[in-house]
Image (cartoon, rainbow, N blue to C red; front, top):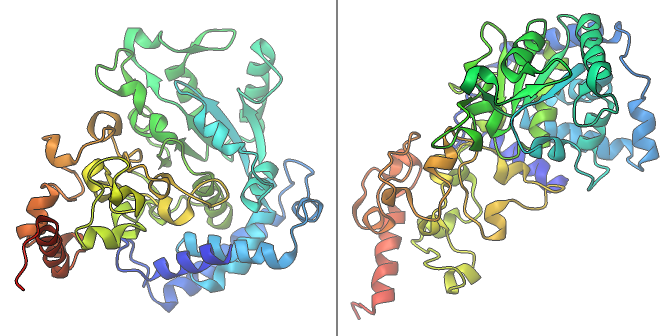
Length: 412
């Protein structure tokens, strides 16, 4: 946990982030006061369930010190100064006052699996356990008319207060008949709009719900689209990735409990605290990229020495996410860490554009985020715009030196 805390805190002031964190002392003092008022309001609310966060922590052998370490790391992840740590801790304890309705549409249920991962119990999982999950079609025992009644009662009881999580894309082909649900065979499209109408905010989870994902890949036979193509005039947050990291789900809910608002979003409606970083800039193999050291084929010497995977199709230079910081499976590892290049799953149209083992230069597709678009060799020999993507001039010189050494050329 301490490594994660330090890593996230370091990135809080990192120039590689697209987030403007230096907003001034007055800004944060005003925000702190608003958050205190919000939490006082939450305390006066009746909990949606009787689960006690402190008791659950004790039952799982998690002491106050470990919990506060987690709160510190989460505060940094949310791009808040350390002074907010006690408030984040208080917000976590009141997660049972945040009613959640979860819809599962056209998808593989991977995000529900991530939500339920059983490698804990860790604090992230405990936080998710105590939220008031009022409806989840995959998890609940009820079905048919009973399930529809449960959903209707939850939406009425928590009208204007519940967070609507949506997993999966929405098929629009054949007037929505590719996807229907419930005893009344309501189309996914109508089901989503009905549930979103009285939600406080809508959170699209996973690549399918955010941008259409694999169902929307060419030729897109069902006419699949993302939630933001259907839901309008409602606060909407996209948490893409395949699957989305539960830490980012926790972050969004905590931010809502803490402030009563959605977090700051980028142009694709992704929370900046999670998607304000480019994979390439925070990659553990970045030094090898700068030095011109690449894996040329699977199993070669470069692969054995954890060299850069760009030549093997890594899309880290075009992808924004915090995978390298938060990681997966108890924060142990992530795709690049196990030797597999990033496939850009948090970017729109990732399956058609990025999910293959070749560099972008070979795909004849312009990288939308201004990433590395030429071949690595061209980049190393003469790309003078390296500074524009955060790479020093020394990287080009290192790549040239590496090429000469490999070819046997020497000045001696």
